[in-house]
Image (tube, rainbow, N blue to C red; front, side, top):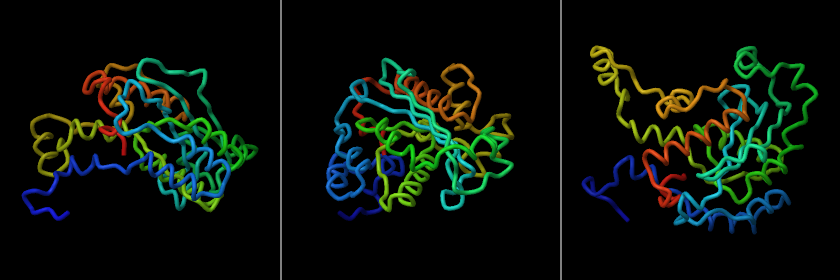
Length: 251
């Protein structure tokens, strides 16, 4: 279908367009070769019309040696399963893994996982099956999908020769939608500074503060996963409805 300039969807509408994830999972379940991936895809995912209140989620956070999956690696992973009405911390998982790329001093200062701590840790391949089992059948929640989805896709492809695909609800993207246009252009940033205002921060801690959620020590994969789960609960309570279909939020 061709769009004229007038009928072209807006940027915000286009950003909501997501794949048919249940169909994508069925295709991948038949096409993939690795047993753990077959199990993951065979569990399927929520139908697009599933209300948020009925959607099983798993908050996911990765700590990495940097921001580029082609040059940096994963050092820890945290997963916390939850639904809108309850977070299941006792069912959460946390792993420290040995990256295939060298640790940089700057990254050690951020996530506080030293060379000594990761040198005896397993390679990510040894925990991937457990990780996928903890995510299977759930919609993944992250705060900035550019880390979790890109790093896991690269890591799985590197080890198993097949990519990993999954839908995500990105709590940072939700905040960006709510504050879209605030501080985006140089002129707007200059005007807000002139008027004494500040650009809206989309960082996890700042986003949580807007909902009066408590402070947590940052850059621990399990704690940040928990923080993302709580943030989504707050976002839904303030801006959406339990009856909102998951397709309105996932990508």
